[in-house]
Length: 97
Length: 379
Image (tube, rainbow over the protein chains, first blue to last red):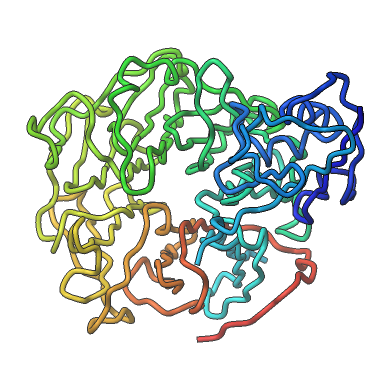
């Protein structure tokens, strides 16, 4: 099955300049973690900015499956449907004044 | 023509300042790596390099080491994060607090110190980094506690004559020494008081803020602690209190004169509860006798209504004679002295909060290429 990742501007240098990456995910049905693993294969630099080296989504990054943040839908176990859009956003909690 | 370059790390990027050896007018370039907190900068001039390393942290995207070989015109942003904890550690990098190029005899060696407290090592000029296992697996680790800035390994001191011996400092864990190239580490805190613990002289757990050593006096160390000023004449085996004649022995910053091993600079802070300049006067204190006495250096520094403080790596010297001394404040002022601290001028005001300052003297026969957002500050 196939999912679409939406890449935020600051991470596009690590994604070959792309704002949108369509990925085939081998596992069917996949969880968000499976889809992200497929993304990391295509863009390992994105991985290190989105998750820590322990594989946890960074504190000030939000990953949405459709319109729901994965923080409220099961984290990396969130189910992903064929054709789903997965969007990565910098959280508004980040940044320093 | 000799040029002094100041590397200035701030809460929102890197700034480079440049001046001829007379050090009267500073040209400012930046910000580079805008928006990222730069807690560590280092210049690597070994083997003809003019490389600057920045420890750059984004609150969103994490921390990486980023080098530039052309004073910021281009930065070699790593595609994959270059400093990462191994999976079995369960740890994740928060901040890179210190970058230390190796000795001249090991031109491709670098170290960096990070939060959570750990030491990383590169032997290929920074292409790849490995955690130093001897410290990562230290049995004391579970009892180290974070300070206000996190649980950071913020200081790396090499023995210039012995590549196997070095000291590191952790807030709050204390000073640790290795004599076998990092395979094993022993706490070296005897005589350092831990004001904030029931046992005032524990083996470890002290909150050391900075340790300095003059390269000509290997093993003679000076330490600025979270309360306490100390000197060790025996490579850290024992420490003596040298806080005589300072308005507060609390502070972060400490640096040593490039040519005078008995001359050390500090910038005291009122207390850990208040954290402003003591008596509302911004003063650098200097000892010229290894800590037997201290003198206030005030000419050109605000002596009324001064509340600014200076962080642990934001005080430094250049290698000229007379030495330049520089410090940057939390409020974004960079002060410069071209006479070993006798007098001071503001090199630039209005930067973001300054986290670290380094000075490099380079032979700048080729003019630096124009960078974005250039400004000139003349005082």
